[in-house]
Every structure is written in structure tokens, then in C-alpha cells.
Length: 277
Ligand SMILES: [Zn+2]
Image 1: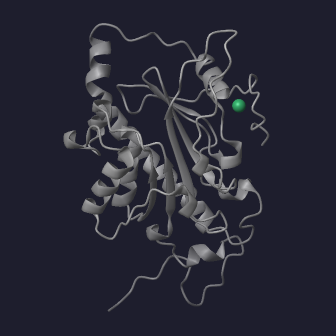
Image 2: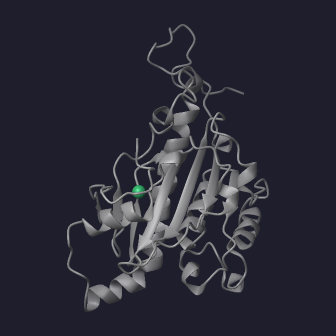
Image 3: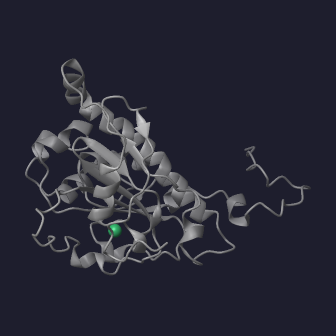
């Protein structure tokens, strides 16, 4: 049976010195491993889209129950409401592709020396505590302590109906809530939707989340592919791992999926010490 050679691998052609060698071996999507921390409706839809693209290494983590608000993107079903999100999503992924054996165990996620790993962190941004009150304690699970700090991170923050996607950074440099709040507060003040526009935003919220999930699936694949094509400096600092990642924050505002703005990062209030690049 004739086969189609991968571009660049034709015999008789000298390898372009700028071409990274592992890319000639044509990495497959089943070499990609994604660790999900937080499984709201958007993150669950993202996991489903990645599975559709051939990503089988899915580690999904969120013990909170599925709520009615999670149903819109179609990843969960009404019968899942009240069940732990991770259990419902594992079952859904297995049904969609029997080759997929999703787990819920961050400690089993490969280290960053294995190329093709990405962490997706999706969470709702909690309101800042009143002035004078102490900040709430860390909400990160103990099982996250062993996550390799070099993994590239796609970090998603829901707040007030909008979604902020932080630029791709190493897990060790993940943004803290103060950085996310300051960035959201510094954005261009858009007119709050009212009247029919507000109704449309509410009606279209599930479709908007689904469209954003599609876009994020491509971004996650790009981050993973960049590290699969890195042979030269694998494991040498986070920069090499993030070459395929987004360099700017993006703000997605319903109802229109193409309504994306690029807010400036504001880490001036950061006290967590995680902001050093
Ligand atoms: Zn911070």
C-alpha cells in the first residue's frame, strides 16, 4: 500500500538544520497527556474535544458534584447532576472512545521530562474578601503538591460571566487570585449588556462555552506539540515547553465566540511570590 511521507522526510533531501528532528517522526495525538484540575462544564467540554482529536491520556480531577450550570456544554448529562464531576466525566469519556482509560489521580501524571504534557486548570474566581479580613486559605488539593513545576499550564478563570485565559506559563508560575482579579479589573470597561443583549448572552452561554472549548482544544494541542517537537532543550527551563502556547491573556465575553480581547497582565498586587518568570 502506498504511503504518504511526512513532509520533510523525503529521501534525497538534506535535513533543514532548523527543523527539529522529532517533528520528522510525526508525533501522534495519543502521545499527548493532559492533566485537568477543575471540571466545570467548559473544562469537561474541552476534555471531550481533545478526546475527539485523538488525545487518550486524560487525567481528570474534580470531586465537586455536577451542577445544573455544568450541563450546557453537553459533556455532562442531567442524570449526572449530584455525582462527582470526575466520575461522571470518566464514564462519558470511556463511552465516547473505549480506547480512553481516564484516571483521576494527579500523582499518576507523568513528569515534565516526558514531552507532550499539559496541565489545564479551570476554576471560578472567588470574590476578594472584605478589607481587613484575611485571605482565604489555599484551596489547592494536597495531591497537587507533587505536580512537576515545569509542566506548561493553560489556566482558565471564570468571573462575572466572562472567561480569562492566562498566558501559558509553567505550573510553578501559575497566577494567584490577586493577579487574576487585578487583571480583570484593569480591562477596558465595556458596557454591561442590558435588554435583549443580556437575554442573548444568557441564552447563548452554553453555545459560547462550547465554542471557547473548541478554540482551547487547539491551543492545548499546540502547547503539547511544541514540546513533542523539542529535542534539543527538552527539560531545560519552562520557555522551551511553552513555545506553542499563548503569550497573551485572552478574555472571552458572551455571547459572540469571536469577541476576544487581550487584557494587560497586572501582577502588581501579587504577594504569592509566584510571579517571577
Ligand atoms: Zn500572584
